[in-house]
Each structure stands twice: as structure tokens, then as C-alpha cells.
Image 1 (cartoon, rainbow, N blue to C red):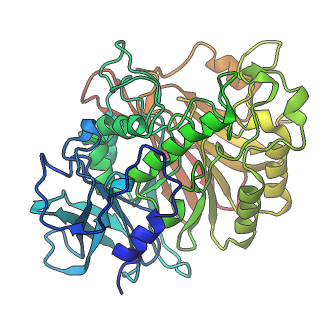
Image 2 (image 1 turned 180 degrees about the vertical axis):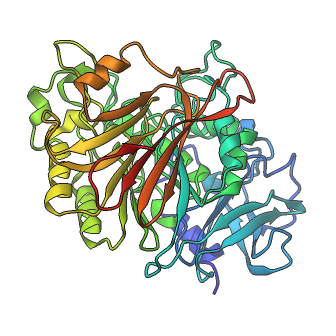
Length: 516
């Protein structure tokens, strides 16, 4: 069966994007096949994503001069691709041509279907006489199957300037089926001279600004290794666009909504251009649909969420505040009506043993500052208390099987039991939240913060807290979920070793989480 995206459908889909004035559409529709590049065109690497039981997306971007806007002509360029059942490509199972367009920065997204389920494949691209690195990816088990095991890792928050991506080097060497990235893939702020390395430019505004910011990240060899080793599921958080934004509202006062949405349009397009996303994620102006569902047979359903684009503004001016005022606004939302309805419907229909919400911000209602005053971060689920409580009650009343929430954003590791009443330690536990630290954001962390013991005492549902850097590796079977907190001792020096700092287990059908 042919791939979903060929030249005609790719160009038709691309035309649906509301393009910014800076984009120049080529006058000629002639596709260039014999292209001579001014440098190696595959410097940003290759990646794959959104695997299904019979396919996946494979991605690359032609960029012979990456920091100069890519260095490509304003022409359509033919890109050939191959998918093989072996690493040496002696058993090519699919091949074809697609078109890299200047409208999308000569990025390529090829959707494959009709492949054999639950097996590994290898892929590569060719443009002109140039051949890309080889990537490895896999299909998922069929929805009727009952796999014995799934191993995956999740990560977030990789500020290029604040540390090296050593954790990805270790991740790439692991035995995984999948990687999930929960956001803050890039950081939008101006370059600083205080980090261990620098990304170019000032605060991101234009489409070219956003495109260029991906270059140092995606040319990092450790990150490239993790991309080429496994398929990825991705969603964004705030820094792919603007810190702590909410829908069309900036964290900065007096920013006009129209100007802000133009900037969001640029961020949306650059994110799509650099991620292995399906056609449904092609931006429509400032809108980018990232929420979607992926199944690993009947072992696990992954509901990938977006808690940024559809939320109402952070209540009470944001920051750390008591639970009062707008926190209890019944019309406030972090998911948005459509996404919340989709999520609830999917959870009700799930046949999987484990139901996984892969999302951005802390869901447990954590009092962040020890002492007599209770203070909560308004940017997290705690700031949207009515909807947070609605989801806890939904898990409990609908008896959703084994809810597991994966979160990032906060640059620290947590293990939280999710409660119907966080003020009552004896209330029902309805799920478990595993929160992953940053890959590098915040620089070198520490095993324990000064306030950790007091915070855990005031929030008895917290079972683990740690501020080192790294990722979380999860091993899932029909009987048990195990999360291993993998940390590196330093991100400000290269080649730091990996340490398994702690492990936690959830047993199928039982509430609560235990140290392994």
C-alpha cells in the first residue's frame, strides 16, 4: 500500500495553513530533482513518531545552512524515502517520493500505513545525491492484542544553554519501544552568556526566529541519537511559544491579542516543521491540534494532551497563591471543552489495562511552600480546581482502569498519589502521577531540596521528590507498572554517568504506589 502522503496530498494539505506574510510561495510548481546543496542537507537529523499498528510518521528537514534559515532555494525539492525491514536496507518494504516545500521550511512528513504490526523498521531519505542518516522505528501491536511488555521513557524541559543533553545519550542506549516528550523542547528567551553553551538570537517573534532556534537543539548529537533510536510521541508546553501563556493571553501585561496570536502562528508552524507529526497537526493559523490517542495493544492507551492552547487565564494573577477567588470559577478550564470531552469519551471506551495521560503540568494539588500559609502554583492544575476535581471524580466514579498521569514542566521529580480529596489522606486514591524532571533546564540539580521534607509532610500523597536532571523510564506489564527515575549527576559537564535514583511500582487493580 502506498504511503498516505504523496506529492499531491502533501501540497494540498500544506495549502491549508494560514501562512505568515514572510513566507514566499514559489512562482513555479516545477519540482527540482537534481539539486546541488551548499552543505550537507540532513544536518538536523531524522526522526519518527506517532506510531500505529500499521505505520508511523518519518520526518526530516533539508537545511544545508541551518542557522541561515536553512539555506534552501525557494523551490519545490523532491525527496525520496525508503523503509526497510533490516538495517542494511536489503529488504526494502516501502519507498516513494514526496516534496519538500519552502512554505514548510523544506521539512518532510511522510505517513506510512499498511505495514506489519508490532515490529521494528529502518528508514532513510535521499535528496539529490545526498543520503540521510538511518533511523529506527516501530509499529505498535494491534488493538486486539495483549502484549506482555512495554518499555518507554518520558522527558521534558531541555534548555540548551543551561546544560548538556547527556541524558539523551543514555536514553538512546536503553532498550525502549517509545519516547514521550512532554514539552519545552526549545526555549524562546533571548540568548544568555551565563550558560554552558548558547543558542542564537533574542526573544523569539518571527517565523525565522523560531525556525533558527530549533537548529542548535536538533543538531545536538545526543538528542539526535534518541530521535533515531525510537519513535516519539510529542506535545508542547509553553516555551515552544512563550513562557506561561494561556491560549491567546501573554504572561506580559498589555500585549494585544492579535499580535500575540500572530506570534503563536509562527511558533505553531515552526513546531510542526520540526516534529514527526501527522497531517492532522498542520497548523491552521495560530491553532495546532496536538491531542491524540495512541494504543499499545490492550496493554496501554496513551492520551496525549495539550494544556496550553485551550486554557483560560491563570487565576488571581498567576504565581503562587492561596486557593481562593478565581481558582473556583466553574467556567475556568485547563483542557478546553472539546479536548476534555474527547478525553472522557476515550477513557470510557478504553479496553486497555493502563490508561495514560501524557500531559504537561503538575496535576496533584501540591502546597508548594511549607508553613502556615498554603500556596499553590496557579499555572498548574491547582489553579483550575473545579476541573481538577472533576477529573478526580471522573476517574473514581467511572472506575477508569489504572489511571496513570505523566507530567513535566516543573524541573523536579515527583511521585504523587491522586486523591478525591487532597485535604484528606484517607480519601480514595484514584490514580498515580509520575512527574519527570528536566533534561537540562535549571542546570545542575540536587538530590534533595531544603524544603523537601517539610513539603512532603504537608502533602502526604507525595511519595518521592527529587531535583536532579534526567528522565523517567517505565516498564509496563499486564500485572505491574514500574517507573525508574534515571538521573545524571551533572548537566554542566559532559559525559556524566547515569544513576537509577529510585523506582516505584503500581499494581494492576490496586490503588496507591509503592517504592520498588
